[in-house]
Image (cartoon, rainbow, N blue to C red; front, top):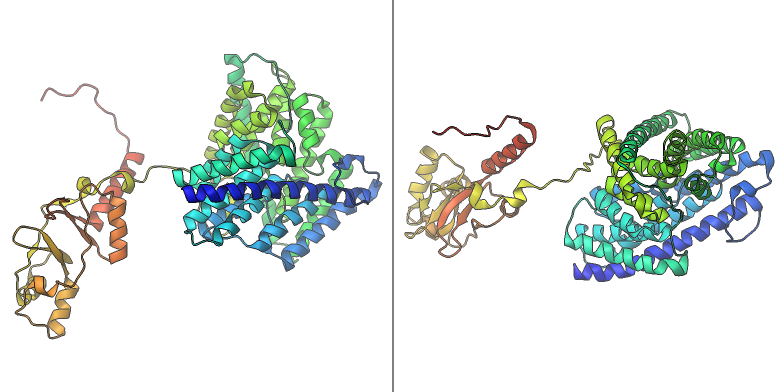
Length: 569
């Protein structure tokens, strides 16, 4: 843990620097594509004067991204977070230097040319690549590489959005797939280092500063729950539409390299309808939170942004999902707020929390992310209510999240639910078969062979001395070998096993440790001995472990009424 925490300090700095490079690259690409000048000054795409030529800009940018994916690395396609999850779960947390360089560059070109994406997905992939590359420079396990990969991803998100708590929770709810000090402490270290760097690289304070002077009443909490349910349904609809569009692109008689250009054409046409839908849309998010949008403009933005984002992302170009989801959920919340107490701006914030929770299946992260983005922590009861209800709707109507569905379509199963493994908290003494059958060490090999041929009920037996202490483990295979290889059948069992090592456990060992012994020794039965005397007190078999698994599954599925008053008998 301490070694990884030290490495996370370096990774956190790398993630912050990567975020700064990405933001500058997006600004440079925006200036080049829309204004024809080389500059890193922040500009809005809506200020361009290209007229109808606007349609061509996203096409050109998407074509460049398609070429980079085809001849550079196919892993830069998509929105980043699913690729990071897949690398963690199925790729031993290995990401290449090529991905670390091409992912931010391709995303900068995509967003800078008008792609309706955010920078969070690319920086999660880039920060993760930085952590993975550092880990690969040392002799670390896949689990330790995962920790540094996730630390880099969380650090990058912190630098972009200034949301350290949400970044830590994103790591826990979406990326780590565990809760251990070995991973939690390094992730927090990386996030804190990135947060310290942020004022010098990107800026300090909330990304979308706003304060809503609204008293939170029970009725508003109830309304927030309803808004959460609606945005959860919105998230489910968007996810379903996204993958239907992906399927449509897959049926095209064109190489996937050209798909982003087709998506870019739709983006350009959408930009003619409403230029606010182009790019990351941070300015539009701020307007929603300020309540300064006209209703008609919000309706147009919601429809156009949804269409161009789904088609562009479905085409396989490079870009993130958080910022578009914030804009879409915020727009729905804003429109609902026209008929609700508190004003549209409040419900835009609540809608943002709801749609993130529903789409990403990360309810705690979503609730905190919305308030950290704005600095309006007084709204957290509303965002918690909305994100929880959106999460509930999402898990009821969608099999997977917008992130894990992409992985499932590649033949990988990902479960985002955490539970305690019964093998970890049950001890061997609670599960083992007590007073097992044993064979004496003084037994002749000839008798052992006869025993296995006629009387044995198990494949192996512990061998003990006169005091019941473990001497080894004899199996049916041993007896067969002695009979066919001309062994001295007058020798004792203890003599034949004198050079053999026998794995054993003690009653206090977790069952998971015994399972590891079974796998290492390729034995289906592990003797359990008293820690002080080394006497055999039990045996743990594969059957015992399967029974434990079945009992745990029964607790999950079987229902029954418990009598509150027991019979006197």
